[in-house]
Every structure is written in structure tokens, then in C-alpha cells.
Length: 258
Image (cartoon, rainbow, N blue to C red):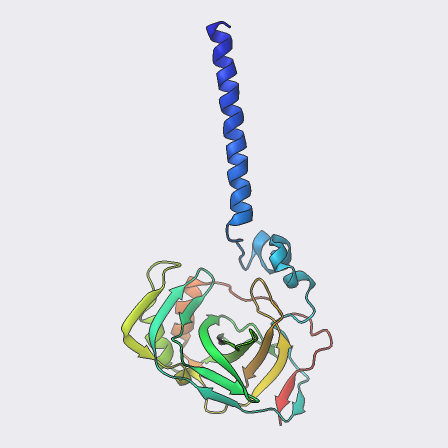
């Protein structure tokens, strides 16, 4: 074999190996890595169900959230017993929202069933609407029971006065995305975010982000709390849009306290 022919043979083999490796790496990234989703474009809410088999409920589910709260049926609902304790501030910008991971030991109890508080996070505007209208922001307080069921308490926020609880959070925002910032010297108690009137709407639904699992009981507090317009702007400067559109009720009943 002359040198010229040998050179082209080696070159062809190298190119084939490169293409194979690149394709294999791309496939591995797609299959093994986290699935990227967003709130707009080709990875936005209308496409979530096509991004991964694990996200199928986002497209095929019949008990999806959020929903428009309208036509609620009056019912004798159990009071929510809040048992929230102080926690060191552990705050993260996860790329989709600002999330605060809560220390163990805080919970709610509804109808004798206990749910432990895991974390809370924010959306702007609110994901759930009331008679077609959004609030300026919402906080979702995520709880989990021993049997794996989720209970999310939603607290609406409306532009009015300064919110001291939010001010503490925003004063300690992490400088980098996806890095949890622990501020041991700062203790928070999420009970300070709750309105005095804790009457609520309730319905069976899902996570509002992938994988859209239909394992959530929603408890949406009727009374909003105040937040300054500048505090809303601080959040929206980081996340211009982080809401999923309202979903069909599909025969579900929204209940409201009498």
C-alpha cells in the first residue's frame, strides 16, 4: 500500500470513529442526562409531554394543574393545622424559580393525615387563576406524606406593601444558578408568609412542572398577602415567565369552605 493510499485509509477510519463517538455521546446525553424543559418555545409547556416518556402525564393526564378556580362548590372542609418551625435559610436558583429547601420537622395535618414540609418556591404571575384572573405572584409550599402523596399549599401575593419575609429571602439570593446558598445565621419561618385567614379552595391535581405527576392535593388559600411591586420586579428580572397555562378540569370539582 503506498503512502497516499494509507493516509486516506487512516483518515477515513479516524472520521468514522469521530462520527460514531459523537453520535454515541449525543445519544448518551439525551438518554442519561436530565431532560431540559422551559416555559417557552420547543421545550415549553405544550411540548413537555413529548420531551420524555417520564413526562407523559403532562400531555395525557386528566387531572392536571393549574386550573381556573371558578364555580367552587361549598363544602365542609377540614381545617389545615400548620405546624411550622424555624429553619436555616437554604435558598437556590434552580433555573426555573427561586426555591427554599426547608429543614425537617415542619408539617401540616389535614383530616388526621400529616404531610412534612419539603420546600417552597415561587411563580409570577400566579399559576392558578380565580375567575380568570392571575395574582401578581404565588408561593407553593410543597409537603409530602409517608405514603408519598403530595399536598401543596398555594399562597397568593398581590402588589401592595413591603413583605418582610420576602425581603429576607431576596436579600440572600444566590449569585449563581443551581447552587444552594445556606445562610445559617438567618432563620426563617414560613408561617410568616401565611395570611391570617386560612380558608381555602381544594381539588385533586398534579405538579405544575414535569413530570406533571397526578399525586397532588391542592389547598389554595383564598386570602392573598401583600408584596411590594419592587419585590415582584426582583423576581421577574430573573424569571420573566415561569407559569404553566391553566388546564382543563375534566369533571373535577373544586371545593371551597362554607
